View (cartoon, rainbow, N blue to C red):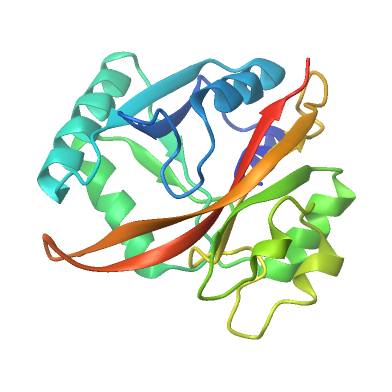
Length: 219
C-alpha cells in the first residue's frame, strides 16, 4: 500500500525496492516467502530489487552493521529517502528514523496514522490482491492461510487483531496490483507451523508459533 500511495502521488522517483532475507533459507523472515517469489514481484513491478541477507538469530548489533552498510551504499548512490509502510507503531517508526538519520536519508511514512480498515477498503478499490501467507497462531487460525485479503476476511477477525496485521498478526503476499505488468498466479503447495525464538534484550527468552503458507508461482 505504501508503494501504491507513493506512485500515485508522483512526488518521488522510485529507484529500487529492498527486502531482507534469512541468509540460510533465502526466505523473508516471518513471511516465509521465498527469494524467487520476491524476484517475481519485482519483475512484475519493473523495479530493481536489492537483497539484504541477515544471518539467522543475528543480535541487534549484527543487524545494524548489515543495514548501515546498505544505507551507506544508498547514500553513495544519491538516494535521499526510504519509504516504510508503518501505520501506528511508534516504537518501530522511531527505530527506523534512528537507523537512517545518521546517513542523511529521509524516512517516509505515507500510511502513518491512517485507519487500518480504510486501507483494506482502498486495497480492494485499487484492485490490489494479496494472499495471507503467514499468521501468528496466537491470534488467527491456520485455515485463513492462502485466503485473499479483503473486507470480508478481516470482518471475521477478533477485536484484538488489527485489520492490516500491524502488530504481526499476519503477513500477506501481493500478486496483483495496478503497478504490476501482469498478475502473478500463486499455487498453494501446503501449510506448515514453525516456531521462532523471540529475542528480548539480546537473550533468547521464548518461542512463538507461526503458520506459514507454502506456494510457488505458475508460469
